[in-house]
Every structure is written in C-alpha cells, then in structure tokens.
Image (cartoon, rainbow, N blue to C red; front, side, top):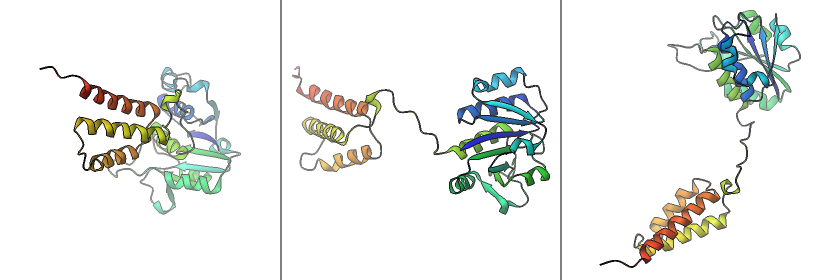
Length: 239
C-alpha cells in the first residue's frame, strides 16, 4: 500500500513537523500540504520533524483535488461530532476497508486545526474516518489525529525487526522442557515441592511459562536459578 498524508490548510508548524515525523515512523513516503498557512522553514517544524525530513517527500499544492490525484482510495478524517455517524468509519473499520479492497494508492486527508474539512472537501473523499472521543472535548489536535489514524491503518502491516542475538530468539520446546525438569528436581531436593504431589506446583509453573514465549536467554536464566538452588542445598552446613 502506497500511502500519502494530506494536510489541508495547516496553521501550525509544529503540527506539520509532527506529521512529518509520523510519516517517517510508518514508512509513509509523501506528505502533501494544501495551502499551508505557515513557513515550512520554521524552526519548530524542523525540531518536531526530527529526521523525518530526510525520509519523507514534502510537496505543496493549492487544491485538495490536486493533492489526492491518482489515489485509488481517499479517506477524510472528521471529528466524532459529525452529524451523521452512520456514514463515518472508525479506524478499525477503515483498516478492514483497506484489507478487503486492497487499494494500491491511498490518501489520508486531515483538515486544518480550526474547523476541519469543509463539506465540499469531504465530498472529494471516498469515505470518512473518525476517532471516537468524549463529547466533552470531541476534537483532537491535528498531530494527535495523524498519529492515531496512521498507526491504526498500519496495524499489523509492519513487522518488528528480528532480535540481534540468537539468545533472544524463542527457545526450542526441548530446551524449555529440560529447564523446567531441572527446576523441578532442584525444588524437590530443596523441599519446596511436595514429593508426593510435585505437579500441584509445577503444573502452575508450566501454565505460567506457557502464557509467554520464553527466549533462549530466559531459559538459560531458569537453568541458572535451578543450578544455584542445587548449589545452596549441597553446601555443607556450618554448626
């Protein structure tokens, strides 16, 4: 999916800089500004963008139509106080729309800090997206809206980098089973477990570990703990 962010008449340089950084965070290659009302060399924009300016192409245009030209799907963001909520998607619903239709070029359009998108601008877009908020304060800051919408639309599409060390990869089942058996022997020898019914405790330990995916490093730590228990109980006791 090739996504571009479109900010319509943004007023504050910090919001543009934040949106630029967010675009870089999620691999969005282009940020289009429609009639921006601030200087793009503003120090606040540069400060908030961090390194995003080196990773995202920024273009300017005078009209929303030009900004979204060539897009297969145009999503307009609107506040949760929209009069007709039946025609407004939540972010998860918009993500389902993308998954079912698989558009190649998507434009996510955000209105200005004051007033949002006009009725005419909303008609340019295919669908409307909102972030449900409290009625007491239904309008999000522009940068906050960009963060929530872009992160939501990209959920599940960006995989975390693999661990650098082999020790931080998931431990093989055999290694985990051997470590748990080692721990059981150590706890039996120390008297912590009831020799008549060690499963009463060890089954809970197995369920606890089963709720996670232990790494090789964590299994090695479990082994070390068991070995230390064995060492402590094997030491000669001083009178």
